[in-house]
Length: 385
Image 1 (cartoon, rainbow, N blue to C red):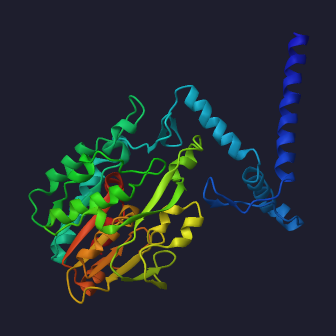
Image 2 (cartoon, helix red, strand yellow):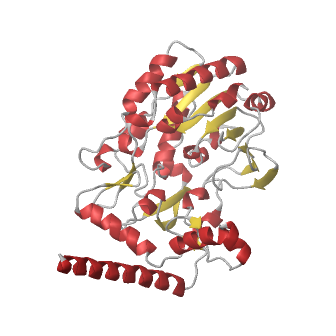
């Protein structure tokens, strides 16, 4: 019995020494301001004061700083993902990953309720009736549903077709709301989604725009017309940061270079109050190429309100979009067909959508969401306030 206690004490001492070494190693290296892996600002070691000690802020900041500034944090995350891979566990932090370096966000049928879905559809039908404008539902299938071959074997995943059937069933009797078939996006034999991010890539964005324009009877252009060019070939998306295993798994950021001239007015602010505005003459913000948030190259990310004017059209149809981030990369393939596109992101907008519809008098409204995001959305009530 005495020998067993001695052995336990030995391992405890070794473990404590390891923790001390890791802590000293963490504070000895220069502090970092930003984690490229996590795409966030890091907590630094706090300055000492008795006031901070007594109110507890010093201890809290020290704990967070030691976690953030640990030099072992990134290697530990990669090692953890490696252990998951070699033990056939392909699900980490809500992300599936496969041995060939493909990542898929984990989405299942349990992630939404029929009650929320039905409520959202009733609100949208009412919005369409009150606005007097037709509403189209352009719902983007998630990567695992559109490209099931990228999923690990037997991985549970969202039945997107079943979700779309529910939506079609509840809206088919209403002439003011239509579900857009995503035939080109679903049937294409080329890669349509990023390998390391949950968004579709440039080709997928083009196909979704083509599906929508074809559905409403507008002409579509060949993708060759847009003269695509690669602006970055080492893009790591948000899913990679959740399981950072494959350092050689990169995506390419490709954007169209042949677009009509535009004027974009962004409105944004805190708590939905759009008290700040900016203007741009491009649908792309190149500065994001030098950050980890490279998807925000498209329109500088998400804004409460964005109004895009096609400078080549003196007249023409106006499109009103209620959207999530999937719309940002599809707009370049839509703007040729419109004089103006008004984009509202309910996550950052606190005003009256009804007033905006009256102000801009669109020809029609499109709700452009990833399908599970649509089923989960809790802000659609803003459409009828």
